[in-house]
Image (cartoon, rainbow, N blue to C red; front, side, top):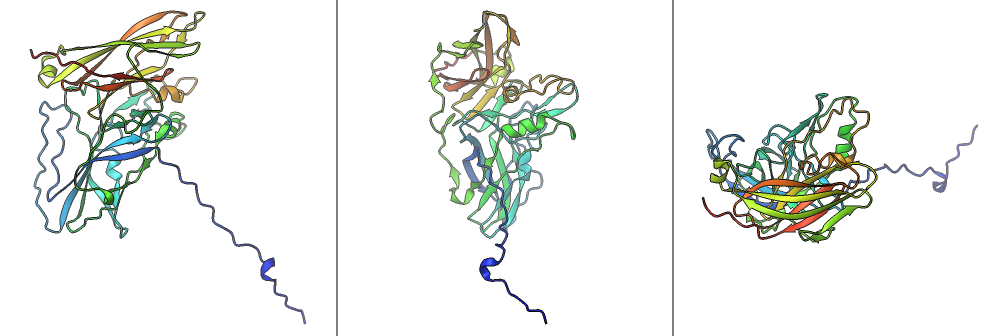
Amino acid sequence: MPTLRVASPSARAAPTVPVTATPVPAALRIVPLRLSESPLPPPAPTPDGLPAARGTPTPAATAEAAWKYLTIVFGIENISETARLVGIGGGGDPNASNLAAASLTTRDNKRYKAVSSYSSFGWRTAVARSLAGYPVLLRLPPGFRAAAESFAGYGSSVTPPNSITFKVPAALTDYGTLTVPPPMMGGKSTGDEVAPKLRALIGPLEPLDVGAMRVGEQQVTFPMGAQATQPLLAVGTPVSAPGKLEVTLLGAEVSDPADYQVRAKGWKEVSFTLRYRNADSDQAHTLAASAWFFGQDGVVYSGDVPAVGDFGRALTVPEPAVLITWDGRAASSDQLGGGQQRDRPLRFLVPRDLRDGILVLGGDVDALYTVVGLRTPPPQ
């Protein structure tokens, strides 16, 4: 009769330990600006393009005793060591970004979906001649914060900050954690080489512990939450990419906009003059350079939808250095001859009361220029 042998415990195979994915460290942080409760949903922002900047009343809204509406107004801060794209937006509609898929998870693991949201980040779309579309996402330098974006063609209306509203039980006081999923990238469904590069530039959003917040206004400073990783330069200081490019901010001038309606709505025009010089005296160079003005009001003032080229027929895919500068209007000429220099004006529409901010250059040259004491034009 065969002998049955039992293996000793030391001889038994070790149990298989499941492999868990390493979590991706968050690069962006949600900065709460205001937390409010109301028995009725908040009025929706005026649709873009209408002349009156007035909230639209919510139709047929009726208070329900068992429910209330929680609205979180927030900005975004870059807590990483490199410039990142803000992953909020879907293109085409500021009321239909990936914020609509955000969730609020309470301590008892109940989830509440957003009932309304708004963001001025990333709702423009850059379209190549091949009909591939890509969202224009805001570029945040390390340590910078932003609550809204005002770009060319939209600067005549006040830009509302980011906000998201949840319908929650009236008795709920600990709201748990807010989570925002990454945006849809668009582009072609197959064979697209641009969208993966864009995804790599987007900073993951850190979940926000709303339970630790108090109802009311939160004290937040803009445009930075901490000291920038780059030095803050004074007007007139040159910066360079050795052997290729040198850029100098020559000065800033403030004037009244030529458009009467823009003046009447309380805006002024700021013109920055940048001098670009090709540091290579032997050959011409094509330059990638953009600019953003980060105001102390938390709003980023930038250029319109850029021309992104014909990606579908280009022989090479655009590099990240170009992709990450889409949001600011190109401030340099496409090409400078050997040893040549050229002065380029940058014009931004900003509120008349805005006096301080930081001009950010990105692309072949990264620089942060401190701008203070922008005067207010005398009333007409």
